[in-house]
Image (tube, rainbow, N blue to C red; front, top):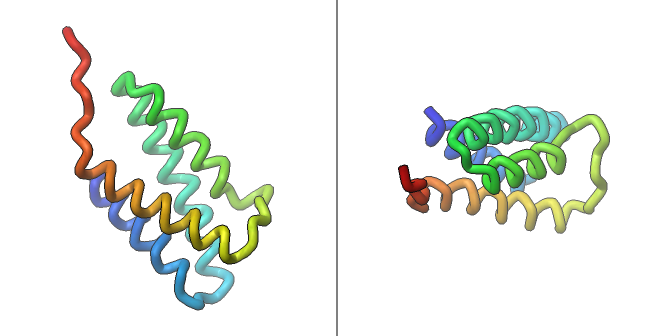
Length: 99
């Protein structure tokens, strides 16, 4: 299920490059905040602290309550970088901790 969530969010972020109604961007912000919070919880449960902190930072970046005004061009870059990063995490094999 984690993979599906990452793919759906990545597609939503890529769709932000299109000329969408303002409500869509709000939906993406709420969705991204929730998904990144969920991914942070999963990462910390797996003892993947670095990934957990990255997801927390992304949740804070996308949170819709105190908007960070970066301008459309910069947000487009952020959306693409984060979307590609989400897809990349599907292919990067996680290091196994020695037991």
